[in-house]
Length: 105
Image (cartoon, rainbow, N blue to C red):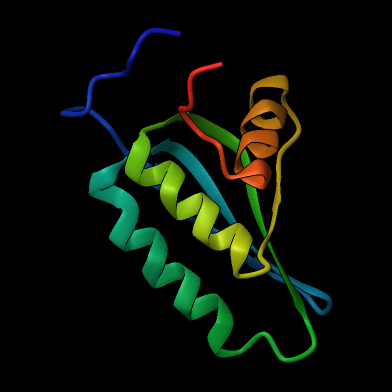
């Protein structure tokens, strides 16, 4: 996959709130310039979850750089449920869970 242009990058973070779960959905590029915004949403999701679970939907993420990946690893370590339904997202989730993004094989 070609590296997207950072200058034209964007990340949307709609948050779905239901009775049982709070689901922030990341849509676009998970790159360094958006890490602070995602962290703010992370804090907001934890402000009022009550008994609801927090699950981050990564299905629409199309690029992750090293700072974005490091944030995903921190979110995983903080017990966020990370989910996605594409093969690329599945591979990303495997690497996040193993804490080994961008290691050489």
